[in-house]
Length: 69
Image (cartoon, rainbow, N blue to C red; front, top):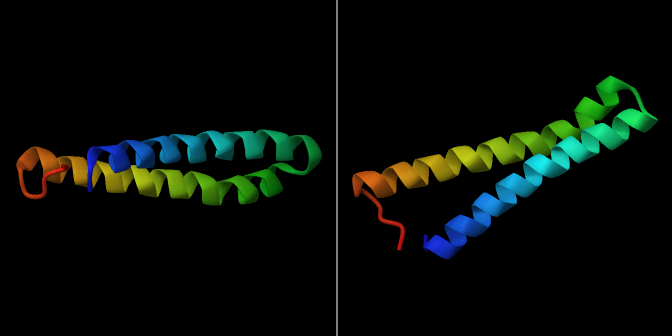
């Protein structure tokens, strides 16, 4: 993985997290709390999963096992 791709994935993770909160807030205006959580949860889980992946890649880079080029 090159550094530009790493930064793009980090920006995507931030965007997914932001979108999850926007979806939860706007859905809360129109529907119940449970519906808002159900609609925003996949976005937030995807953001957290992507961040976990990026932490693993960064850790592998720091230890020298798999460098980020």
